[in-house]
Length: 287
Ligand SMILES: [Fe+2]
Ligand SMILES: [Fe+2]
Image (cartoon, rainbow, N blue to C red; front, side, top):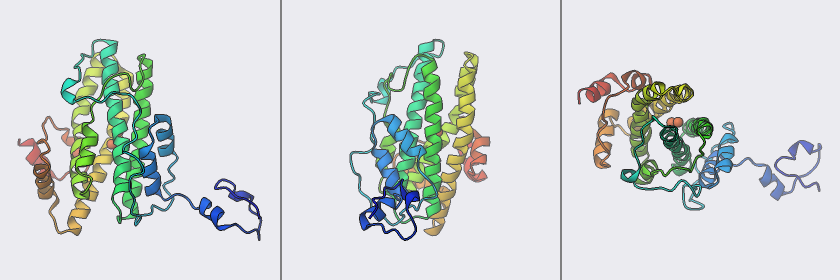
């Protein structure tokens, strides 16, 4: 009986048999399981290739009840994680200051990869389209990380060189038991905040002549509007299924989780493109 591996299927001749162990090896790993395992990887190159290799046409395994294989997320040994209040504020006038900013943005993107993988493996029983949407997000976040890290390299640094904080993953842990809270507080709040702050960061980078970084942030902003749009749409859909009004429920969750009130200036055009309702935008703008 021929021994077949997952990659050796094309060598199978008509009429040849496959033993049950080999047949199992040929079954593609369900996407939710692959997402969990990618999230647990500690080495960046391995995590980035695992995310890029996710084939979104593979079955998701929506009903699988999964448990963490290891402490999540897997993280490289560096950067050192410290409280946000201890992070040094650097101006952008120096190369070092610019590198620190690009590093902070790369760290956000790495967290965004982890958050997108986490929503996929953690919450079972959802539509396949939901899982595929967030795995597509994970792949875009990985591209964002790589763009920023490559730029960081041109400034003489690499990811891990500066300390960073763990605020984004904290929100993943706090909302681990509530899908609606996760959607309300991560894509609908944290990623939407990214839309608001992008133009200001770009203006500062333009001022110091870092047009490569400005161009990278253009790509990221365009993609992030799509991520926020997914958050807005899935949140509204799951709210509707539970008979909840999404804008009121988002505010109730913000209060329940003691998330900070969104602060302006808001990127209303980007938020509108992401599907926030006019009434919600007007309420934000009136604050
Ligand atoms: Fe991103
Ligand atoms: Fe994102």
